[in-house]
Image (cartoon, rainbow over all chains, first blue to last red; front, top):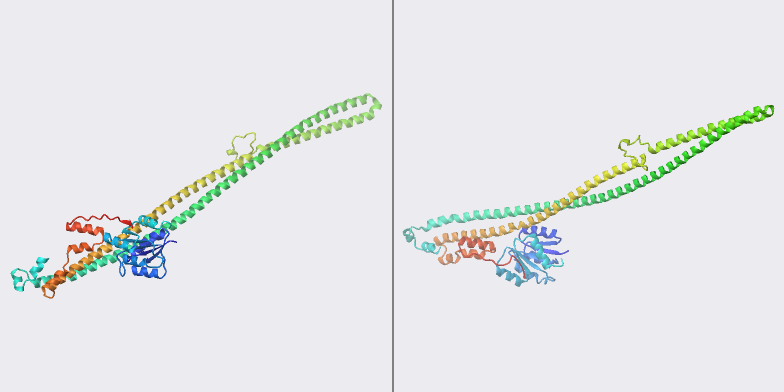
Length: 123
Length: 348
């Protein structure tokens, strides 16, 4: 089963996205910030896709994306940034950190699942 | 702001000249931090409450979603059962039709055999009549023989006895033939009655009798018709129920799609939370500046430090992260309209 890791400091966002993804048939791992997500990667969690917020406490999403790329087996794993942030400079920063795409909140279920199909064609 | 600071930075003697008293300003500003704190508390309360409400909404939507899925599953199971029942009913109905058809064919065949038997018995009646004719002729011959024997006198006495015996035999043969004929008549009448009599059953519903039809086959046909009618009625009910179940399934699927969409819309809380956090941050900046101004007029903060920390609306603009915030900022400050041409979804 395809596993998606959700990283967001908003419990509402985690619940909402987890519900949408679970119903679509994905297995979901959650983390409240970048550091927690990185810890999970370090403990052997191997998601097929990561969807991360940008502005989070302890470790922001862009730093997390940069660090996640260094984790074993995560070099080519798609990382989507899902954020309220719309600043172009932040996008460029995320792209340089190894993010695969940028989605501005709110994202409808169909839009989100459509993007996932694009980055995970076989899933 | 700079002009105000210049005014505040003059000596206390000048303050009175300008009608501006630092102690009054400081006292007026003293309440601002507490005021801001209350506002900040309210904002945090709103964030907390909307967060809890959003989580509760998601929970309830997920519950509705689960119930809809369970209902869709149950209805699908029911529809499957009904569909199988309909198929089974059709199979049983078809089997019953075939069975009744075979029974009708069997009884028609049996009735034909009985009719042939009756015809053969009626043919026997002709033979009985011939025997009766022969008996009558024999009786006449015996009478003639007796007359001739009487005419022969003593020599014909023995013959007279024989002739009398022959007459008696002829008479007995005629009686026996008549008895056989009567029995055949009774038997054929009774068999005709068996073939045509339906008085003890559904004679009111009996249609016109064809040459081949009998009471039994009519009754079997009636049973078959009634059974077919009932099967059609049940099949109609099953079909309507299957259709209704299909509609419920479609409604459940639509409900699930709606709840999924609603769960997606709960993202508004995260967006509102972040906007409120920015408002709280701005209120905090205003509070700090009020404290700085109060400190300055009390000579516990230098002008340089005050000016270095002074807030500006442009700083606020730089803190905005959302396109919507920038648009609102432009509308409120009368600045250039915010033009965010970046796509909402972008794959690098």
